[in-house]
Image 1 (cartoon, helix red, strand yellow):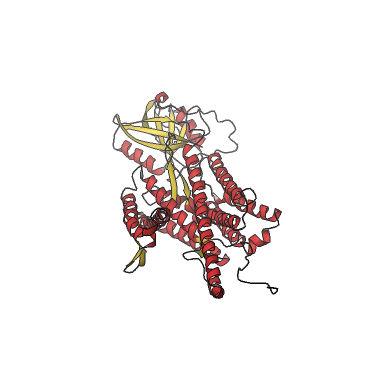
Image 2 (cartoon, rainbow, N blue to C red):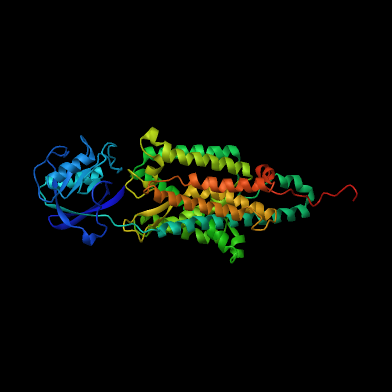
Length: 490
């Protein structure tokens, strides 16, 4: 299956451009627009083109799908003198034009292109209004390497890298502060041991499973309620999360330079003590998210969406933590099955891929939901965006952040630790995802199908090889020696 551009002219005035798919049979369609001929479009009579229509002279025939094979339609149209055939599909989606196995010799010398239902009906209504319609068919070649996918790969890997360093750094600072408190007040050890780091949430196996179950329910809700008004609600929720994430990232970054403003606070109704730095940054974050929401349909809006999305992911990786490899394995294994089911197996129950429909924003009137990162394909004649969902970065990122915290806590070198190899594994899995996407004619692929085996498999294999798997699996941290405990000899 390859895509074909169908440029139209109505009464000699350039009009809409539609995208169809070309058939495997018939001659190839020219790739350059300047080499494509502008040809008059006519409706077939009969519309299904399964029996001989009246004779024409080199026009393109518009026909309906059904009642006979695609090759039969093409042969009948060619016999009538048509130069090409446009087949109106009975769905908005486009599929490969499959031929019967017993048709070994097609012997068809005109191109056949399938159009989506809405595009075909639009052209048919124009012809019924007695307007003159001409079309131009051409199929531009895609670039061998999609630069947007390269930048998206760098963006995903860079986000996990920054999030992991931030998480490990915060954990190290909390550990140092904890040790200072133990030295100053050893009698409060038991009380301190029961107190976790402020603002950090450790997930367990139950919450890891519940996370995927809740995500599945939310995805079905998105699928069932997808509409313009529902997307507006998602935009508001995304903006709230984006503001919180952007504010947290900026405060953490600027607090190094404006230490006094970060430590000084003032009481704010409903929010309690808030630092002066937070008060100064919050209006900017709210304004940024509001401007993005207003102009999200513009061609440059992807920049704001990516900034808010990355800030949100970084904040979650820093706050939500995987305490050991057992929890990480459960979380990624459930996410692995979740991704496969909702991309591939959901077609058996919903007659279409739920994940792909939600990601594209079908029935919403918008170009996808905001919970993903995207970059425009600037050097692709077909345009569009390369996208990656938040979960494809966030969930593996939680495990990789754990690996760096463990490496720093055990004072492992980069080569002897787990973080470097986990990052390489994630990058390789994401790279294989893009290769599979291109090999599958652009059909949506579950990224975690490739990322999880690479990332989790590498972690488990290294832990087993180094005889550290038991400690990684249960404790996830080195044994601590309490500084105030003295031996009996002392």
